[in-house]
Length: 193
Image 1 (cartoon, one colour):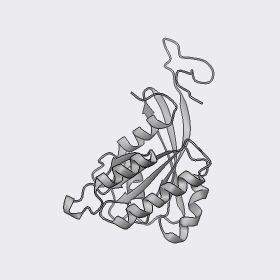
Image 2: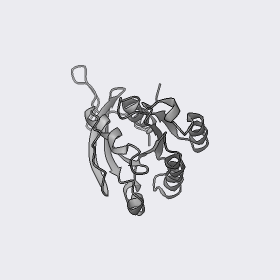
Image 3: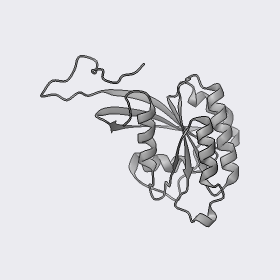
């Protein structure tokens, strides 16, 4: 269902009161341990970076509301643990999700291979046939000679799977806000321009 052009519950806006529309969307962060999922989330929530961020155990929940084209989009975010022992729990977190961000570390090819597995798992087991999946090529702040996964490889995969793709850096903040903005725009609530 598209909410584009619909008035908020209780009627439309008047000349003195702007239209306020808010909808919550479940979003899950997936990927291997130490790829930067929690760091991306910390940057998005508080515009901070912490070198000594503790490893997520199980999952952590947070929310943030952003404005996009005059509409309020509330993200209900699950940051999942990347360790193998927690992998079997992931479907519980992305069940019913509107969006998923799959993160990989550009300096570690194994994390890109596993990111592809995450994407395929979400596509094959998600209860939402319209789930928006974004691939975050993280650690873009590191020098080119340290990056072992060419962005072109990720672009090919993203195109094949119909994913959003952004090169991100939780450390510098590069494209972190844009990642969430692009997801909000792609949720089908209103057209992007």
